[in-house]
Length: 244
Image 1 (cartoon, rainbow, N blue to C red):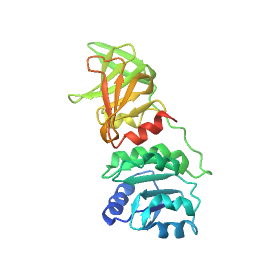
Image 2: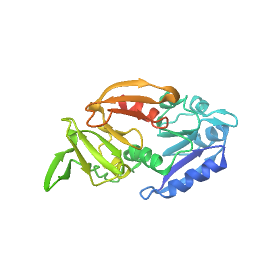
Image 3: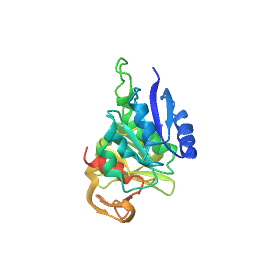
Image 4: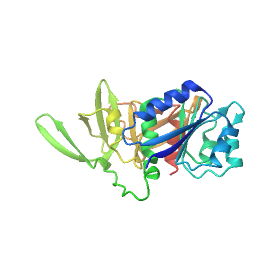
């Protein structure tokens, strides 16, 4: 059965861009309805069943948060906005992800994968996600199998991908950071930017920077400076991940 998706967006270009990206999600079978105002959203939600909502925050007739004051919303909401200062309020109003415009298809896919178990029909048996448990690495003429949970973080540098172990050892992986992100357990690892995927156990300090970015001090440093910056667009989801 197709999922019912509501798009609450007052900019046609943003709606069209989102629709194009949704159509490229291979596992997503959906029907979409588009409304442009809080009034239209409240009217539609009061009469129809929905499985997922994409919601801009600044609409022509006010902030979309007013919708939640007028109608009960019990399904996941992915907020899409050009403003980064509404994240906390978004997560208080069924927000499962917070995408800063202009976001790309990879960011959308990550948000959808996070809520995929909530979108599958209850009558369909859900296959338990299979995440990477081990990596086979080469060094010289030797091979070694390393457990995923022994890896503190993954770092992309000079077109190479490194696995930095908690022990301080590091190995080159024959993979890319974008491909690897979806194969790791999201409860344990988070892609903070285009260069780093970090384990929560590798973070020893966090400092808030301007534009909602966060500087992470990682352990071990393993040949680098041990610092990773959570990007502006990743920051809301990262903070939610820390508290889950």
